[in-house]
Amino acid sequence: MLTDMNKPHLLCIGHRGAMGHAPENTLASVQKALELGAPCMEVDVYYIDGRLVVFHDDRLERITNGSGYLCEQTFDYLRSLDAGDGQQIPTLEEVCVVIDSQACLNIELKGPDTAVPVAALLTKIIAGGWDKEKLLVSSFHHRELLEMRRLRPDIKLGALIRGLPVDDSKFAEDLGAFSVHPSLDCVNQRFVDDAHERNLKVYVFAVDHPEDMVKMQALGVDGVFTGFPERVLENYAQGNIENGW
Ligand code: G3P
Ligand code: MG
Image (cartoon, rainbow, N blue to C red):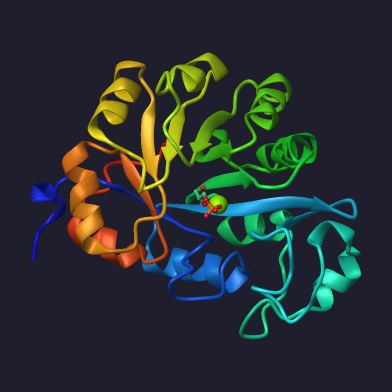
C-alpha cells in the first residue's frame, strides 16, 4: 500500500459527479464523489426555462425516461423525469448546496447562453461563503468563457478541446485561462509541455482505466476527469487543494 508521500501526483476530478457509480450529473452522483473523497468534481450545465439544470445531453432519451430536445422543455417537465435510479435532474444551485465548498467544483458550460446565469449564481454562492478559489468554469464554447471572464474576471477558466489546435494552447493563454482540458484521445507530450510553458494546468477527460491513468501521469498531466475517483485516489497523491484548484 503506497502512502501519499511516495505516490506520484495526479489530481482526481470526479466526472459528472462519480458517474461510474451513480447516474451522471445527479445529486446521488455528487454525493458519491464526496463519499469517495474526490477533492474535485465536474458537472455539466444548461440554462433551460430560466433555470440552470445539471445535464449532459441536448436530448433526453439517453439519460432519462423522457424524450425530446432539452431546450424545448419546461422546468416542471424536466423535474418530473427519472434521470436514473429515481433521481431528478438537479439544478446547479442544488449541486452547490450538496457540495457546500467541501470539494472543488468545475462547472462545464455545456449549453448556450450559460455564462450570464452561472456568473450570477457564482456571485450568490460566493457571497454565501463559497471559496471562489474552489470554482473553475470550463467550456468547449470559448465565447462563453470570454463572457464569463468579462463578468467575473476573478473566476478560473478551463478551455475544453476535443482535438489539438494548430497553435496548441496559445488560444487558452489568450483567453486568460487557468487550465486546458483536452480529451484522452488527443493529448500528447508536446501539447502538455506547451501548456506548462504557458503556465496552464492540463486536466484530461475522460480517464477511467488505470492504464490510462499511468499514461497520463507519465505525460506530466496535472489531473484527470474520472467516473471512478477511487481508482485515482488509490494510486496518486492529491496535494493540498484546501486552498482551491
Ligand atoms: O469537462 C470534462 C468533460 O466532461 C468534457 O466532456 O462530454 O463529458 O462533458 P463531456
Ligand atoms: Mg462535462
